[in-house]
Length: 335
Ligand SMILES: NC(=O)c1ccc[n+]([C@@H]2O[C@H](COP(=O)([O-])OP(=O)(O)OC[C@H]3O[C@@H](n4cnc5c(N)ncnc54)[C@H](O)[C@@H]3O)[C@@H](O)[C@H]2O)c1
Image (cartoon, rainbow, N blue to C red; front, top):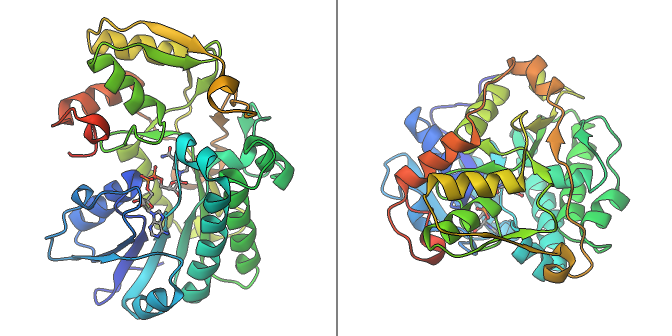
């Protein structure tokens, strides 16, 4: 499949956010023309090289259908990332998070029609119950809502995104749904509760690292650069656009306990911080933390081959080596 019509651009919604900013730079480095649409609600303009000759930045929302209609003629491929992300934000405003995902995806699918589109879902659609998460396991609104504390929130919004995407796939359109699992790296903000930048920031200030529950819950942390490479390989693989291959988990196969993550960060930063424990429920009322979150990677391995992912220790060293300021949430967003 050839997306890269020289006269057209790749549209990235949410391109000023963490993952989006890496994707923008990755594509520009390969000579592609890129349009970023971002309302800067949680992203940062300084995350992207605004002066690059092949980059156009448009400040605006995916909820503005008229604006989207005015952009679509310039575009030959869409990555749809714009979303509310981070526990602090999505638990504070579950309804806004849900509506943004549902209406935003409806709008993106409405303007894309014959333009291939990659929709960013999340491992959150598996809810709280699965040890190993397989694309073909039944994803349900009940599972998603359980994750959201029995409300329509972030996970239910991603479920809606997938339902809308799947319905449009039945019209023979080029649609791929990707489910990232805990992506980490440079420019991820601590502001909305992402665990790695939050721990790094606390460790550098020698403040306690706050761990929810017993810290024995596991996560698979995948480096954003590797994530971006896998994504690029996927969109260039014809089979990855064909049902049912086109719903894809992307993540690192190895998982670690949150306790071990905290110990690693304290050791690497030579911090005097200690670990303190809080019940998850005391911080996020009526919510349940996911105990295990591991991706089943058989689909992506079949499509692009087995991938080696950097260790958490390597990723943390890379984040520390690239940080230029230590001021609140700006800790890791400037590269
Ligand atoms: N980071 C992860 O580990 C992870 C895991 C699973 C899924 N995802 C998904 O990947 C995507 C990117 O995540 P991220 O970590 O880069 O998040 P992020 O918060 O850093 O980026 C989201 C971007 O969307 C923008 N945005 C929000 N509302 C908008 C609107 N109405 N119109 C235009 N732009 C808007 C924000 O300003 C921000 O720049 C999201 O869809 C997220 O749900 C991320």
